[in-house]
Length: 438
Image (cartoon, rainbow, N blue to C red; front, side, top):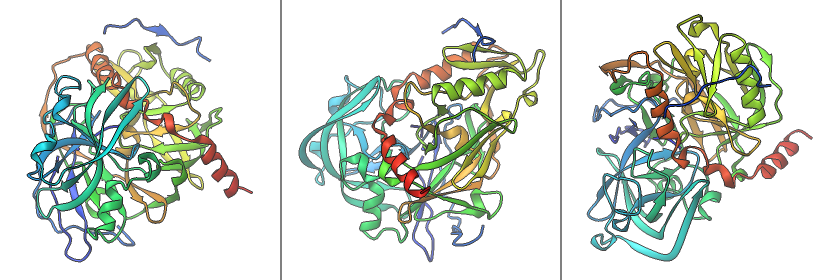
């Protein structure tokens, strides 16, 4: 799961809004030699109500919403890998990760308790609280005002210390929220948007801190904007499997340097809430071995670290290609799947503890502008507009690789980044796959 700042754009003809996104141990190295703008392009009137955002090394994107009457502002992760909206309550002050704000339900005239305790399990950690209803406002200009939104007022959570946000706004399907309407459902049902569709653009700040990019990272509810966020008008659409609860697409092939890897997975989750790309263990190891064969790499805590400046350069390493849907190839170059610090690069792909599916997280989504059509159960990808860094701040790390790993582990140490998919029903996806291919 990963993360967004709020401003709004209005459209004169079609109703949709844009929310700018806020990006938000020394280790022993082990040699891995032994490791086996076209149709329906919805263009925005430029109202420029933008707020520049703090950027934390491309690892998290978060934005602001407001809850309650009077409204209280929260920074949340806009997450296509989950469906619940949750924010911390005042009971969470000493029982949760550090937050910028807390919801005092007794101060809100629009709050309603639904009388049920909910626990969300995230593998290593959890979030626990009261099922409730509240008014939710998205955006600063021409805001969407959503009434009676089901959400969880969290009283306790564990292992969220790496999350640079207060809570999570889930954008997956109702199956993962016990049948309660998601925020996207209610935005459409209450007539606030015409199309039950949203799109996400993740800018690239090149793993720096306090950098502004142009265009800004953003989420649009009700449509998409190829003119601002894509390099051209070509969208590749593919069906998703909503019965899994996730934005799940068919994975038909994986290639490294144009050569197929040995893989058994056939499903991939498109997940704005995950920083990395994640793969089943054997497939991840196969990719790491093939990357290592092009240079010199080591394993550290499950992450691959490669020489990108001593004997080898980053361009020596191979492309990785994912064939999705009916066989469309989506290619990541080493500059896109590595994080470079000094003379070394860290692979932003790692293995799942369990599961035979892939997670296409922010590493993938920085390359491809993603469009999510819930009404027609499909997702579209367009080549994302390239980011330009406007303001730069230096961490001052020099060529040391340890700070880079420390920061990566800081984020990934939070269970939110890895373990939210434990409810993923591969069998249902397999059933749908078999129905398609009979």
